[in-house]
Length: 160
Image 1 (cartoon, helix red, strand yellow):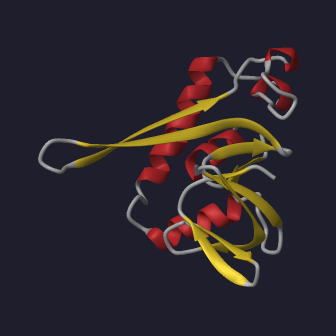
Image 2: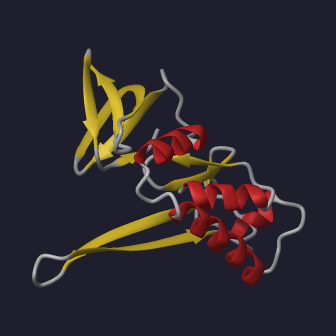
């Protein structure tokens, strides 16, 4: 997420990160990251990581008014090949810090659209959780104060 947000910023978009995996510009979704894990025979676990960024879409092409695209956000949109190259180079730079949890959390927090004290509504499976944002733990899990207690969420979606 950090690499992609920085790549979008290099393209002129003030992108931020909405936990856990959305890329936002001015509160509107421009892209996202999908991570799937697979356990192979023998117990080896691998992760498959993909991302998508809305590139040349006009406002009428987007699925919702809560979405945006590079075309809507920057004056001169680079072609798709150039855009992909910039994003992939930015992502590759961040992969050099893959095992540095302190770095990852600090950089994610810097780009996060969530600020301490924000009220958040999260969905985890069929459950809705309302709370006050406390930050992220050392693993990047979301910390919320819910009814006077801290609740740590390792998955889910922030939707308000």
